Amino acid sequence: FQLRYLDLGFNKIRTIRNSSFPENVINSLDKLLLNGNPFKCNCDIVWLAWWMNRTNVAIPRLATDVTCAGPGAWKGKGVVLLDLDTCELDYSQILYCVSASIILSLMTLTVIGHQYFWDVWYIYHFCTAKLKGYKRLFSSKVLYDAFITYDTKDGAVNEWVLKELVEKLENEQEKQFNLCLEERDWLPGQPVLDNLSESIEMSRKTVFVLTNRYIACGNFRTAFYLAHQRLMDEKVDVIILIFLEKVLQKSKYLRLRKRLCSRSVLEWPTSPQSQHYFWHCLKNALAVNNDV
Image 1 (cartoon, rainbow, N blue to C red):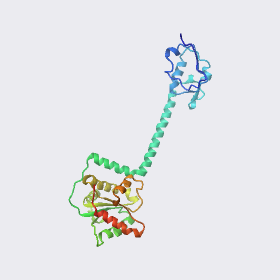
Image 2: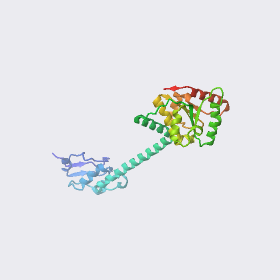
Image 3: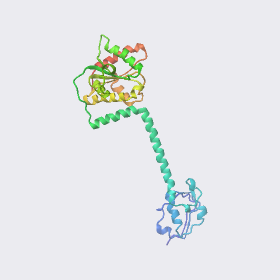
Image 4: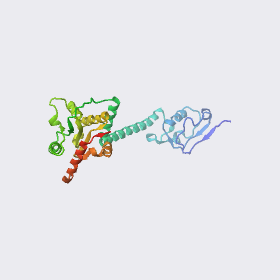
């Protein structure tokens, strides 16, 4: 007994795979009805078009009613007209998906880079230092209570440091601190990196006076990296952050630091009545050793 007649017409069939029929069964048919089905003409059905063009099996209304329902340009055309080039339709879809994924990834990276660039930069350099095993050359010379690093090119910040911070920390009689300042204490003609490294090494604390402009410059990143290296090597947190402006509001690192080392994260108050408390907190932070 052999199957001679098979009617698959009007069954809403979208595709017929090569594995749907044993080869001996489909080739032994006398008649096969496929009309009225919304075939999806892609790579999965190309084999059927190839078989239709070579078989002796009768397929009624092959040219008129056995047609494609899609995709795109193939809609309404006969399935028998398909060839291997049809697979390029799928490649175009794959190319579209890949292109869309790349664009979305770039957009995501751009947003993350804008919002969390500082955190990514910090984590990268922290991990790099750990993997490469960088170590500082320790020195027993501690000449300063604090090294003050800030944007020396910003006139307003420069004035605040010299007239407010230095005045309160160095010139008051009750509790004086010996500060290291770039414009005053750095050696002329010595490379910036050497001056920066020595200032951090010879100071008990490193105070960062932060503004939006300063955190974008390379000197800040280098100074922060060197100061943080002391945390890894000596297990002592020497960093104090003073915010003159609202910066790094979305930084995960900053939020964590505010929780774990709240005394070392200070904001300059806009109200004159609160400034006395600010100086009190800063002096306490300078006087305390933050062993980890």
